[in-house]
Image (cartoon, rainbow, N blue to C red):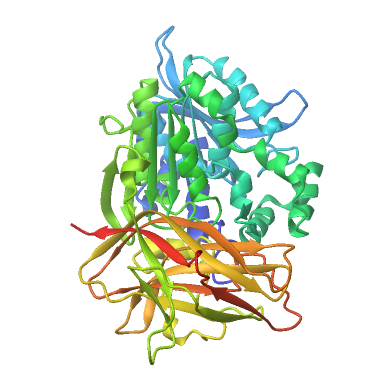
Length: 564
């Protein structure tokens, strides 16, 4: 922690959160009036007093076949009748330095719902021994051993076991379910679908997010294999070892297993997720054929479920209780049946709640906006419907210098502010047009919504063999010269002939965004963002030309329609 109490990493909990979890743990281990009463400062005393009357809590150590010891906590309902059995939910830890303690806020709801609960820290994480394998085969084998141990406990129904996990725990849960069919239902919040796509988008490394994850893992605790992969990703050596490392840790690789077992899977993600690939999660969800549900919310990685993990209300955790109740027969939820569909919020309205049967019906048809040259007396190009626009060129300097346009000034924290109704403000009117090319639409004649998948085609002519561009779509307010980000995507060209023009077509992150009447859509393309690893040579200033040749004219396809 820093001196002002602000987390030093985007994943760290604040001082008050840690104090609350410490107090909860002490009350569970010693449910005396004094310990329980201490929870009243957080409004939790009644909840945990009821919990301790309903269930027994214990901290346990689970020894794996190779001697690795997993730190865990177990909750079992009190006063079970002879022969009575209960559904069980297993909670692999999210990626943080407190491990399974992150889930203590959820124990009362599970317990009141009649569940046995086992939360554990994966090997190498928090107080568990061993090395970190990043949800690899060893972690999956551990999950099977955890289930073996759990089914040996009194009161556990071996036919009613579910896994819930957030972030790292989501990946562990999904990958375990692919290998162990005793897992009858899965909830993965802030999940990943394809690890390689999360690390390497359109040929571009997500190095800032990757380094934040490595810092939280603690590199010294990582397996030799993982340390080798870390160095290769840092050095941009994306070889077969890196691809295979990511492949076996990608739920999308195990679709046949999920579909063959018809495993019920609930997934959640965020529109401005900066850690894992949102398109990969949507693709994974779309290709599942068993019972499934997808929730996409405002914010960034882990933002939306945070209140729920603390024992408060959140859409992801409320949906999780319903999901497990329906498939395992508990009663932790509100009694409502789960929905098997796509549920979403639009930016930046947390109270919005939209439902569609699947992603295909959710995504709007795309409208094509052509990138055109600037009109007379204007410096910025135009985003215009109608005929393709060829024959223009917009030069952009590659200096290694950032503009106002960035994916997110702070990992996780920018998205958290967005969920609080404080989206980051971009002063796009002040952007140096020598460092970025900008195209702006006409003012919108009515309120509109962007909803679904976007695609950009441009022709790029760099002076170097390697080049990166980053595209941002903004909601621009012409009255203030300020904007908010709708979506983005990078693209990297490698080992090309210097000065050769290359036409590239690539997706931007999907979005759901409502624009007010009078706003303008604004496309910004620049050559540097600290979120990504830069491919542009920065020893000397070079130029990247964005062009629109005849026959491959540049365009941006946007799923856009009126708000009605």
